[in-house]
Length: 207
Image 1 (tube, rainbow, N blue to C red):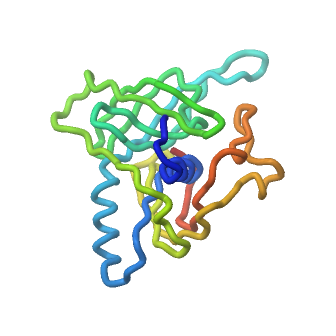
Image 2 (image 1 turned 180 degrees about the vertical axis):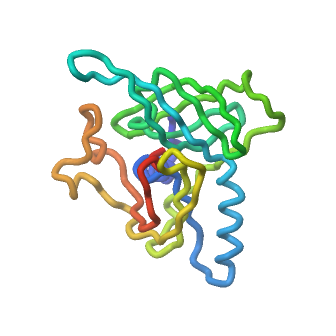
Image 3 (image 1 turned 30 degrees about the horizontal axis):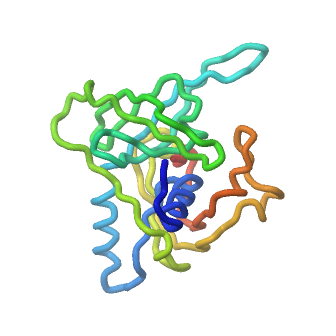
């Protein structure tokens, strides 16, 4: 997925580890309005991704069923998620925020950045109207202490939101885990810069 600026790359890095993260300014007078606006703009773009993949085990390939989260990033149905969610998918089904289930296909994946892109099969969509699309922001504007929302579909249930604050705007995983977070042979922490926060993250928020 091409990135036109360092700021956008940092946003993608934060997305990759923590799930979709939305940040906004700390002005107390406007805090409630900004919370409501962030949720209204992003929550309808969230999807729960059910993944069927093949994994080696007991001397053979075994089918595995798992789930994660993602967000619609284009009107033609492209969704961004994690490589460790969908990077090995054989079959994908996305449950939209309105409850509709739509099949999807894997478009591309990058284990080093832990990012994958999938696309909805909109020819099978039953509902009319355009998709709600989440927009990328600029992580260079994020400051320690800013309120933050983590949105996703934890535990393979309905979309949800948790709230916290930004703890670190340039968290380097390689310095914390003795060489980085390794994923399919790639040292993810050697490339990306994370945004750390204390919003609650559950299993299934990945993406």
